[in-house]
Length: 384
Image (cartoon, rainbow, N blue to C red):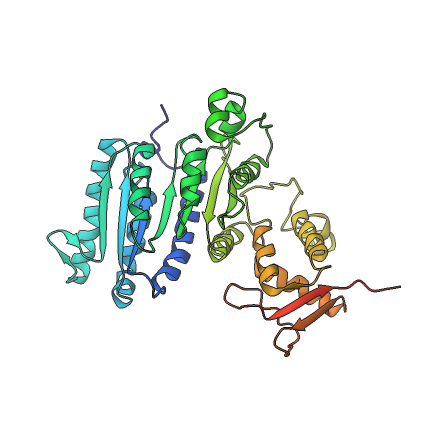
């Protein structure tokens, strides 16, 4: 029986997990409300809990609802509505969460005298509560979403352990074309149970999972290997090491949109400015951000060097800006990283930039989601 984290203070790892959720929700919401092709956005929290820890620190459903309340004027202006689905298989937790959510909505009404709040309900932000087992509820919701034209969703799956998002569930998640997912895994459990038949059957491992600081990255890679080749679904990890135990766990983000991946990576790089994927030195690079400038090359992350080399090799064949954009994100980096490397290459006369429409502007590479094919770029080594 997993411990009830709502009955004690959240640890630093849990608070970091919630920070990532909160920051990504801000990015996702801005994209959704400006999408003219949708009217309702759907947000799921399948392991919602009771809403706070023992000190009143907000949990995931409280963060989600609070963000929507704080931005209800934007929903109104953009003519959008939001439907929240909060679930926990413990009835007592859901009853506590109902009280908390009602307080938040009532306080919003009292402060603003909002005309959209009547009969204890908000017509802009509706909340549905469930208390079902995840593997019972998710297939039901998956079926409902398939019947809705262009449903845009965000799903947070804060499972206990690792077994809930198994191969079947992951394949169902990845089939939702306009859904971004963020799910937690207690990755250390993969090492503990990787040799068991039950674990291998449900998670799809066929070999031992060796203990490593990179375990969560490797687990994300395993989920990536389950994605069909003709699917546009992509995943990205963020590894978290618990301060008290050293246990490795983390979040896995998934989206059928490169733009979704970019938004998640923006959040990840804001939190981890060295590698963009962990709250610790995941590659054991002896990273020291405060090292004197004379020695900074000795203590900087090697991941950047590896990416620069891989980008250089990738550009030995001419590529267009859209191909470079995708290459960048799949490597776990941002367009800002690639643009800087391209500027350095061009400065050293290693780069040939050819405009597709006949116009070129030095330093313009169009490595972003919005631009179509604008330029083709080739790396050329100097000849001695």
